[in-house]
Length: 293
Length: 231
Image 1 (cartoon, each protein chain N blue to C red):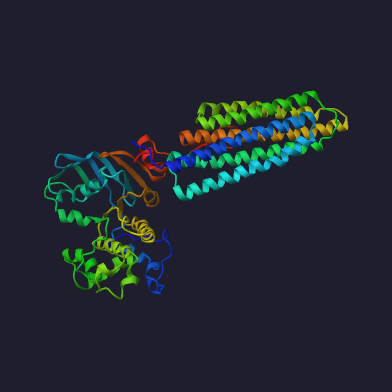
Image 2: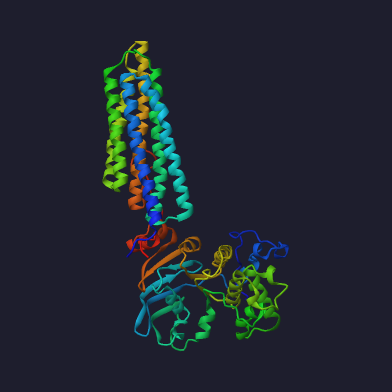
């Protein structure tokens, strides 16, 4: 990681020592900002989707979408069930094609590289574009440590470096003080909110360039949700984040810009404030104000 | 497409009805305050002062309702704009009510049988009628989301402003009769209250434009005259 530009701490809250933890693990989630700043290269990468269509058999779920997800920003995708928002993000890291009968047309660019170009290593794409899912899905038979280490081991990281990077990822998501004494215990023994942050740690441990989140808080309680949202806000200084959410208030809280999708198409993509105060399109207005279900 | 959030919509409509009704209360108070000025009716003036509680009560009700709606329903987009506008408008209504009280309180001070100047009194009465018309126009503009009517209010308001200046000039030149001069000074204060009521209707008109367009524009010539948008 040499040659990485120094991270600017000025815009971030004061660092707190994780070892000064209070006794209640659920009230002590402190982000270790040093750990965070050591992750990723901090420059951010842009994802562009060009005329993207995605199909399940003959059913077109995404219909000719063109969008740019800007670097170091959180972009939220909102829309009713079945509007294609989850399918769209699954196309970005080539997960859509894992579904039998599914196919994709159009281009997805990570900076200038087409992730669908012939000869591109799909595993490398998924390492560069990490994904966090709706339900926390730690590997059930693995310990907390191994859950975070899994992706790193696949990438050939071993020994002390592995240990350091796992610890750093756990610190970056504010889990370190809660799990440091039980790293060898099963990941599924953690609370739902902790499991989801464990999954985020697993995602950022391999130092991706983009993080996709598909309803990352829908299985969490409100406090765990707010902690994950706070983490998202911190992570955006290092990564480009795309979050699919059913929760419009969540989009309002975390996203810099918001995309409203309907029937596989983008209706409106605008700064979040505009979407929630003065949307340009009547359909966006009707959706965000709950005038149709 | 099927409309959902019925209770929220009904609550929002009810809050708007309360605000629109608040402007009727102002018009009623203004009518009586002006009558008290014209006929030097001290008792009527006292009723105006006492009745301000109704407008203050309306202000508190709407404020409470809006806080509850914000906390429980998290309105957005057009709904958020109308909620923000209602909060602003009810404040204007409360202020207009206070101006009616200010006018009423001047009635006993200006003397029982004081000499009057017809020119000033005519101008004051005309200002009262214009201010009332503006209150009703502001109500119709808000209720009907009528941007044109809202913008027309600014032109109307300039007439009130001109009358206000005219009353001031006339009162300064009114002559040597001490009592008449004193009455003239009180009429300057009444005119000032009416002018402020006009300004408040213009503020409501600005909120109407904001609700409809999402743009906030100062319609009157006061202030920087800039335009801002929430987005």
